[in-house]
Image (cartoon, rainbow, N blue to C red):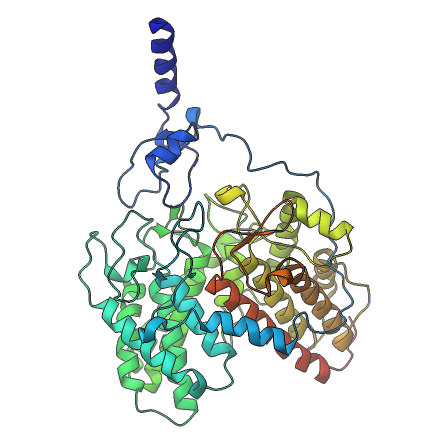
Length: 504
């Protein structure tokens, strides 16, 4: 018996002797050694900041898939809309859930979700630097006026200045910390994926756009003070934009994430506009110069069919999120109707239609749209569709609808639109815009189908098999993306109303 046990332990140890470059991630963000080994996987610490997984499959080969994947199937997105996916009363309710997660106790903090036990993800009651910047920018972008959100932004500005000034306990720049305790703003001291290099640019953009919104409303009293805070974050971006860091999902590392670079570029653009307003033309010029350096690398992410996130994580909806969050007035890179953007939608439609059983069930039941998840092979909490990512697809489609009304669409672009959204042939101008709006409405209608019974409270994820809500409750980022999608719908509706017919 002892010989058998010794042989088993030796074999198990041998299976865990896997070269770092061959280790396949078996864990999730925040996984402990006990949780890892209870899954039958191997545990070996790789050091702070390493991209090597600590929890990995034996023998280096992935274990079972997160669940059975049905055979590839079509998920046509063509949908003749019957009106807005959410009524004004329902949007008011959603906005209320969103607002409740902002400016916690007047601290300026944005809670990721008011949920201390989300399952595999653990406690979400923290202020993530990334989520905070995105959520505050969404608040500004969807507000009726800057005065309507001024108090929350004043508190957020105070919060940012406080957390920027702390000494970091982890040997990294404090601006790259993932998250902070609420409400005191102290740095989260547990193990996590560090450094997170997208935070400074996202936070800077939110505050820079806020400052310029105040200027547009006739208030220049805080331009200099806000600029100082923005400049401190962007100083890091200028010098370190090529640094290795964590991905959007806090799981892997690279020095060339499309999400990070595309949103850094947008932060630098907002900073340059504010620097000009503050009379600092030299710094504005520096920001625009670094933007060009970043732009020179972005085309390398296009395969000829789709835009990939990184070499170690190619098919990833972080790219779709980037197309939206990295856009700004006057931007021409990765325009909504470009072959790069449309090709990425086609690729991810094919991926998630075949990956999620719920997509095929919904389509068979006549529910329009499609649900998107994070990336190919995702296993976190079962590997499910996410509300925030499905909403970001809808936002992109609405932006495409608005763009389609402004001029002629060439035949190659039209072919990609048909492949992505199954629209009819020969549509132009307002008719084309309306057809694309229908596709966007269908996507939000599919979300609606799975959240309506919960009074439009929205969790982070929807089950890949039956669409039931799961994981973190009342996720702030999810509400932010619903609000942004509906704002994009309003803009598209206005564009369609003004459009005239043109020939394809």
